[in-house]
Length: 335
Image 1 (cartoon, helix red, strand yellow):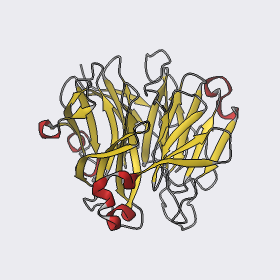
Image 2: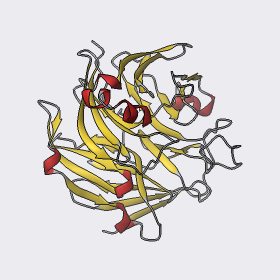
Image 3: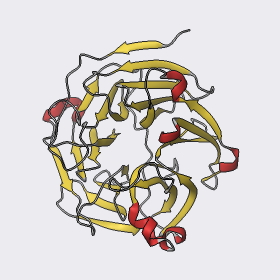
């Protein structure tokens, strides 16, 4: 059976925030039908309640994260056991926001990692990108990469494993330029690590009893250049896992498409979802039942005036999957 192509190239944005730069980290919480996403560059978190029922008119909450360095950045949100509390990856560490409030706080700093504490210059360069919560809710895995004012191609990035109750931060993967999305297969035998600048997703053996990966056993599982030969740099970006069917939905930066892979087989592309050509910088996606939400980036990710167009928009693609509504992300234990 060949690759199924679904054309959404004429769809209009579901929502576009004024001044949007780098919308990312879109996440669905079935408990309150809430959609969350971030703007990494503008350091904002957004939430819409009752999104399936009320659409873009659902109650919208937002907060601007301002850090110790004047401009913070927010890379990813983590659902918790309390539906009103989310954690997020901020510039200096993991923060907490009670949705609807106007205040936030850090609950742990990346400097608790000994390798980063011993290299303050490197720690200063890094910002959060993407991550996930282990299925048992005990740990956060988060990737760090160089911030916008440094060389993003430098191999300064890493992946941290963080326990909020134990207040521990451990480096479990060092030497990666852009550490991106993290997912597990249905049976938790493997963890899938997105390495954007290598155009690769690695598959690593995973021990779910200890929440640890075997980096030495990593395999290049998906090669995005092989499926995107017409594009110079098809970088896998944010993604979502349909864990019941072992299907990984990957937003491919610079290609205006989302690609769906059967992760039970190496490099097995099964579906392509075409986005408007005016938004080549797809940045992340998440499933909400049969629908797929996709964030995008503006062509101008800097302090220069925002370019007109659909870049930075959030899209809602209807009836992409044959799924019942579920939350693909685990709920983090706070205590």
